[in-house]
Length: 265
Length: 330
Image 1 (cartoon, chains in turn purple, cyan):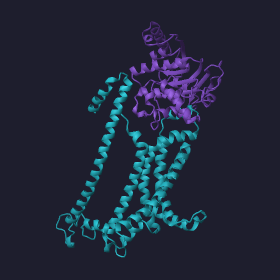
Image 2 (cartoon, rainbow over the protein chains, first blue to last red; image 1 turned 135 degrees about the vertical axis):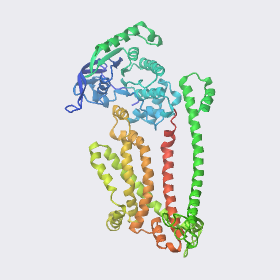
Image 3 (cartoon, rainbow over the protein chains, first blue to last red; image 1 turned 180 degrees about the vertical axis):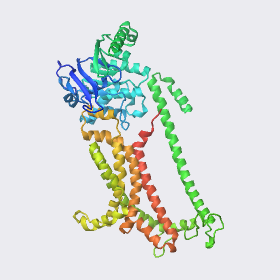
Image 4 (cartoon, rainbow over the protein chains, first blue to last red; image 1 turned 90 degrees about the horizontal axis):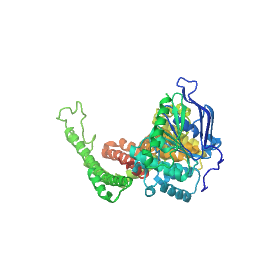
């Protein structure tokens, strides 16, 4: 139980979406076609951002991958399994815009939540929680309560909670959207460090172009009503650090994403 | 607040990590808040004492104004026309009430406070059992209703309708059931248990209504989080819905606890159960002319009992959720 990395076909794509559509409230007056004919492959270890204007269905697509909602048509495979089987196998973990920590639990117990649900022993949970706090550099705050932490620290705890059982895939829904610009850049650096240390696959929803380009190996540009994939931009910036933010290649790709977003309308 | 910020600034000189610095600020502010809360509690006790004295003074003043001495007609305007007259029978003097607490009523060798105290304890047992059953039943109904929106829409109107039936009307039925039909139980049914059931009828309602709202209070993303971890229904209930509903439940528990005292007293009176405060109120009303202060003392006893159960629930709430919930720092 201590080694919780799920057995997955190493050859399988982390995520394989094929011909997926999603219609909310089909056949009713408030019917909304959120996504249409989505094809998307995400390889193991990729860092993929989904970007687009609000209403383009990027969060919907993330929830289809998470099997929190069902596809209307098409299929979603995660690690070669149907998305819902992957959910039940705990192949992935999610981070939301709001940290969503439980106020009544201290930081350490928040991180232990998924481990509790999986039936881990208390001593194992405690050990893993301490490792995770070190990973997000919040070691001294184990016994603090969420209300005592700033927004950025809370979001780091949420990331530690999400990674606690070593999932293969991390799904992030605008996780830094509510943070101020300074904290946001700091969190982006931290996330990249965690990603390069753990080689976890990340699918990251954002509406910030610089954030998408700075973080990801691949930017998926979406267009709205109904949500479609307008372009997939390979974003090979190599090793990233603070200097990357001033790199001409970075700006070139920011421009490329911006143009793709405009073309999508 | 500026004082605490400057104080934390001194601590923070050795700290260059902005997050640790911010943390120091927060801890300092939390400490200040705790001290302020203690001072507030002390002030509240003083204010309560002054308030009781003020009530006694107002009561005595009205007796003077209302012409209570020797049953003389009042000379003051409004008295006797708009405001009722007062005399020592209608409003026994405050000193009579105070001395009545310590007097031994005729035919007993026990001070009256002790008699009322024992009866309050009897009523407290009825109320506590009624409260406990009401919490279990009320929360049970709320949990069942949480499972389906359709069930909630179908059953909540019936829960509300249940409270439109007068308590006094159902009390005798419950007592008769207790005496005649509950002999299948492994213990002997006693009348005070029927009074507890009557109290339950009042207590389950606020628990169901607030519990339902509390169980539905987690944000959608917190429920999605539990789904993403493939949490079972019971795990989500125990680890998310129930803890999230505690503030709502304690609001309901406070209403339910005071209602359980009301239910127990009304239940005793309408079911004719001996031994509690309800019976005492009835008795002292019947022999009011020979000792009006005793009815006042019995009613005061009921008030103290109500305040006691309210305070008991409040302190449990503080121990369970208060400290963590209230230390939010900006």
